[in-house]
Image (tube, rainbow, N blue to C red):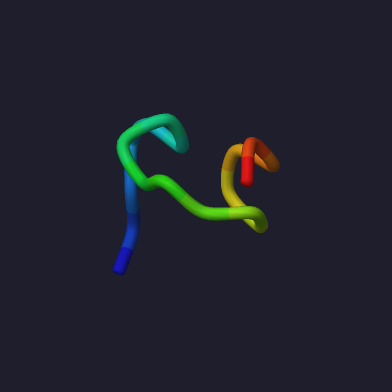
Length: 18
């Protein structure tokens, strides 16, 4: 699964928001 935008996924490992 390759995502062009890391902001597309809401995760602590992706955005580090949660």
